[in-house]
Length: 474
Image (tube, helix red, strand yellow):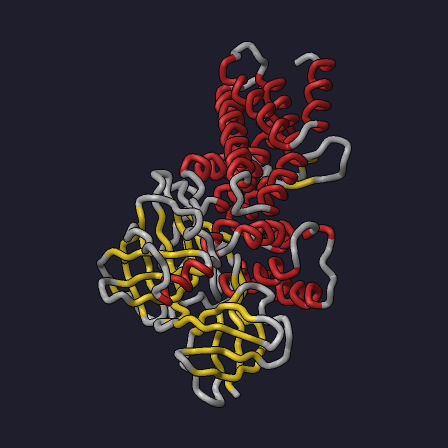
């Protein structure tokens, strides 16, 4: 509360490494719960100041996490982001509870509206860090955001511009921050890798000026939320005849045109400063994903799912998967996963433990199905984890009969996995290490005692430690 001390603390935060700074900010935010003598308006100002001081450090922590997303240190950066927003949310709860009973602060006081905006903004910021763990935003965080949004509506301040950064012309509104939160929830983040989650967060920021909530349903794909039930938004499959006045509709299809324009800009090499630190493939992948999820026609499953039961083992890592398929492995992974359902082109599995090697969108997985000794090759397409530590994973089958092959281009040889039967004149997919097929010259594959000539084509899919290349059989 003393200006000199506060200035020193803020200077220490700004000049420290992100982990040290964020831990210090968490300590300060948590300390407010044990000090009841701070005047409410000063407490609100302190929380807001610490909130803003954390933003550069959170961006740095996010960059550190994404630069080594599957390394041991990345877990620490991810935990710091989540812990900070948990502490920040509790601090805003403290302020909001005080404002609800402090009638000395007028409803039109800018401080009241700013706190409401920052509470919603904190929930939107927390969404990304929760998604990194493939979890849903906690119900109490949603409730805090909706209550703040409703309160701003009662005060007639939903669209009141608030300066959120001292000394800079950065202005926002409660409505705009709430729409950002809703948009992130409706983006199906459980189907994205961490780098694309980061890109989606930035895309939503880029688009949020063109997104809106309406009280009347409109045509095309849309979502709805009930301000009375305080629940998260859901996709609207049908509009009831009697719509409660507390229902709001979110129609992101209006932004799909802007996504198309941005996709062309990215293809032309015009990635703006908003996406600094994110690669073009991540941004392009996030644009394709949002265009599909937010399009006028909701994405539908191609094949029906059927309940299936049984235990199965999962293997990760290209070399380990190949050794399992070839039978050269000295050991098989434990059958720690259970089948939940299956369709023509994929299957869903669950486990009581979150395995970070399996639970990552885009990972290549070998699955040992049943007691037949048969391995199938699949890609992780969706991950959802829970607070108890369990996980549900959806997989797309790449090959039901993969078989190992030794590949040679005349200068070097390497191992790979063939996903399709070898038939002259047809294309086959080969899984190999990234960059293994860097030459356009023909490749010879030794398969089941015979040699086959292949002409490398395009890279169909790439992910951590692998790529799938299309080749023509000569």
